[in-house]
Length: 337
Ligand code: PEP
Ligand code: MN
Image (cartoon, rainbow, N blue to C red):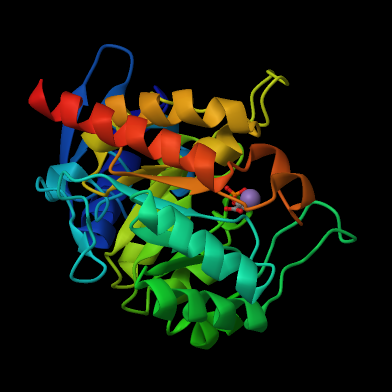
């Protein structure tokens, strides 16, 4: 962290400020006396320093971080990739490619069990399905809630596929005990109280990127979970808001290699929510695999025109089969390069 002091700062003020920094944050402080002003360089773990507190001090002209404010999610402090074992068949982050597939919302036993069987036959290794749905309209289908969780478990019993489903509030954590991966949706990426509670459990978390979150904000949200002791975090790029209205969101492909560089956490890509259009799922899924994603999460519905949510972006099981063939084929080719 670099702190530029105002030219008016006196030697006494500088000494007092420097001593306070050393005592409060256990950092080394280097001082350079320039012609115009004095510059302080803080060396050590500066992640816990509140940059706004520093900026608010009378003698400070400006302050800049030269190190990332996240530590546990940072590849600098954890060079090896994080590998998350879900069960004997599914390990994420080890160089293999996994597809989480299933409907946006769980609608009935027949629906979820049939889709689970279909996507499994096409190579999906995890079943997705929303039981608690964050909908823009309070009048839209809100999910089957606890019953939806039970139906996901039925589908898991029938197929062996581990289940991924979204949590919306911390008080529901006990209900999610038997879920394999807990999804935190885009709208809750900065629900810090929820993230803190998820930090206390030993369960893989799929953290979706917020609608307008920067990469650093997203990593700071992962840091919230990890700071509590849960380091099983996967990051999900699901498109961000831009000025483009053709697609539901804009898939930020560059986020994949950027996250891989900055962090050791696995990256999952959601081409369904990124595009909002079923015909765009295949090319976006291919691009994500080529860019190094560890997995994909894709919406599949047995009857998209009658889906209770996100029908327009849902693939039929047959379409999903075609997409899965292509992405697994591409993955083989990419691994040979
Ligand atoms: C979903 O996965 O159905 C969902 C609501 O996703 P997101 O939080 O990315 O909008
Ligand atoms: Mn959806």
